[in-house]
Image (cartoon, rainbow, N blue to C red; front, side, top):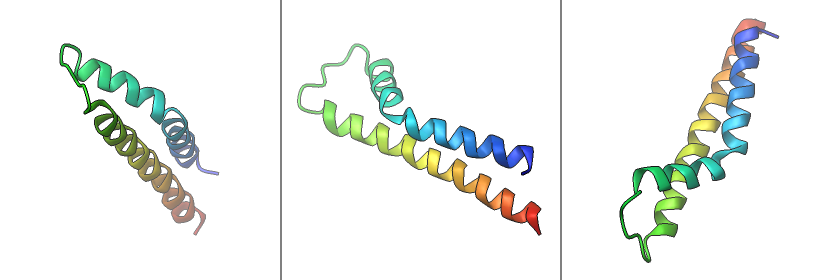
Length: 71
């Protein structure tokens, strides 16, 4: 297995696994002094889903790199 493909696989998996805690922390950092009553959950879901999408994209880059180097 190519070293670069393994790095992308691992990084994508880590991002997917830690998307929920990262989402909580990012919402708390970005909206530190804001009152998010009633809006916290939709904003949190947006952050979590965007992090999951990034993780899937990085993981798929690893797959493409692995298949490309295998040929």
